[in-house]
Length: 171
Image 1 (spheres, one colour):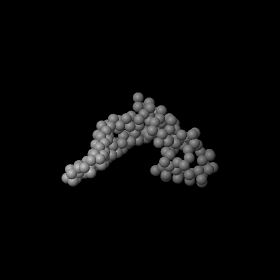
Image 2 (cartoon, helix red, strand yellow):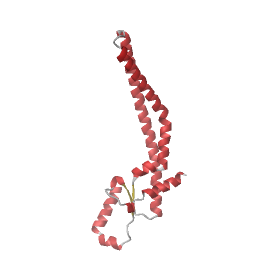
Image 3 (cartoon, rainbow, N blue to C red):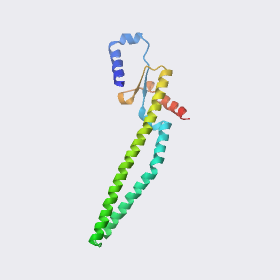
Image 4 (cartoon, helix red, strand yellow):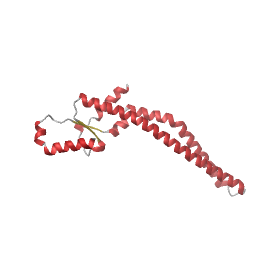
């Protein structure tokens, strides 16, 4: 959609320079979504929620990893003096714990990614609402994001306006 609008604007500027100068000026805005995702109070709150929600699981995974390391150290230190069956049992135990840890880490990553995507979707909806609100109130004809822009001057950058509005809507 943005590509179509950008293309239409380029065509209009290229072929209709006289028509554009005679017509009402086009008001264009630019939004740096990377900054929005870093600084918006909703983004900061979402990161804190995710950290709180997943900190216990993360700590448990780290504890399991330390346990495996301790067993590996024991095997390296005492493996030579252990009986063959005892060493094999310890190796098997380490291997099983590693597999369990790997599965738990995969589940953790999947769950975290799902929740992160949920939070990002909520934030994106809020940002889109605020952008549309500002666009309508201030009569912008076009607002672009950095993903599709090679250069945007400070004069058209409305990122700070969006951050201020997001801060107000957060309260």
